[in-house]
Image (cartoon, rainbow, N blue to C red; front, side, top):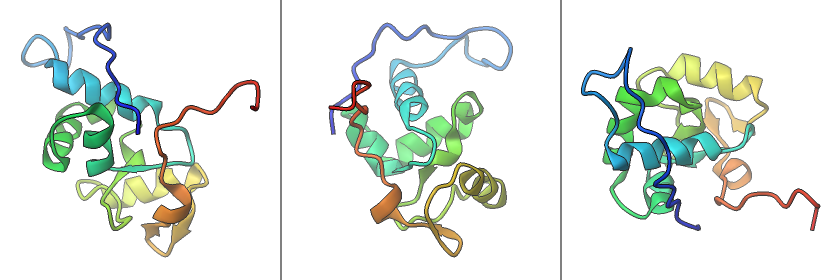
Length: 123
């Protein structure tokens, strides 16, 4: 996976920001999650690898605090289980996006996003 190194992402302040903004790591995580296409997912560990630092727990901490700003439901456990904080809502949103499922888990072989952006020219 190609690391995200977008340090130009603005740091939000204002309503909903209790500490005056995001840490640089949180901004990287949110930028990465925001890039996951509809119908695809990444595990918490995938996101950490994608941004080039941190751990699955660190990604989870960022999403628990700031996840409402991005499509949080597209980040799942490595087993394919939905976000533990709101599993029913995550499953509803994932199904609505057409994410391949196996019961109440994402089919990770089919739905995992590798971080490569599709070529707009179809090459």
